[in-house]
Image (cartoon, rainbow, N blue to C red; front, side, top):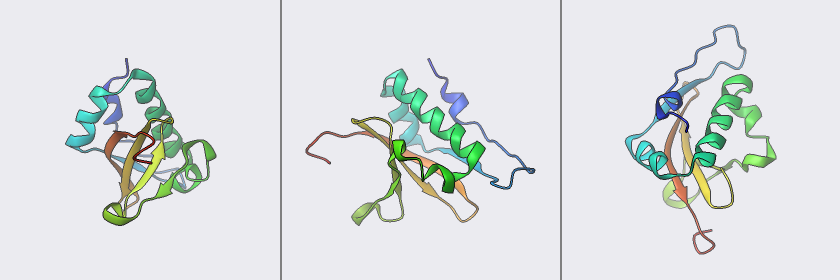
Length: 111
């Protein structure tokens, strides 16, 4: 099982041109994460690791995550696909820190 504490990791790399810091999980996202299957947690950690290594702009180009801006009430937020049924919703602040605000389960009616 993936430790939620690991997801709270703050990673700094001053030598990396793509400096990125994981801003953390909101309380809502922490609750969501506690309910999802382990393989979904693993996929989220893969995404976090990729962003730390490559930078958010490069990871957005990765087709497997289907990173996309949201509209309507969620304008200013982005989502990534963790699989067909789960999405992680995140925001990016002015300092390029990414904050995961929720992990949601979707079905065909919410798509």
